[in-house]
Image 1 (cartoon, helix red, strand yellow):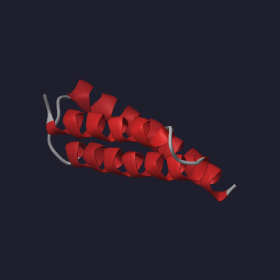
Image 2 (cartoon, rainbow, N blue to C red):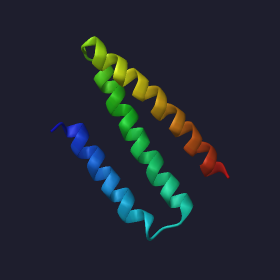
Image 3 (tube, rainbow, N blue to C red):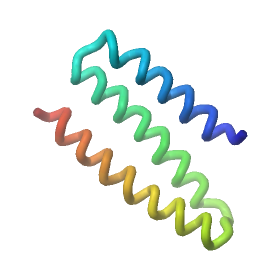
Image 4 (cartoon, helix red, strand yellow):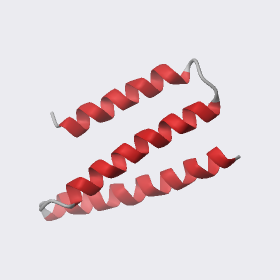
Length: 78
């Protein structure tokens, strides 16, 4: 598997572990950190030549995660 998939799984596992023992603001912060890492990986992938279908999927995913990231930022402020 790709290093991205391994890191994403590792981050997800850390989130699940953290969720049970911390408050909501900690959970949101952890989720934002995972989103930051995911955004960086997607942007890095888009900097490289990709088949058209992969580039389209990455671009769509980037927009979705950016939207989620903005929503998490709003939640963190409340």
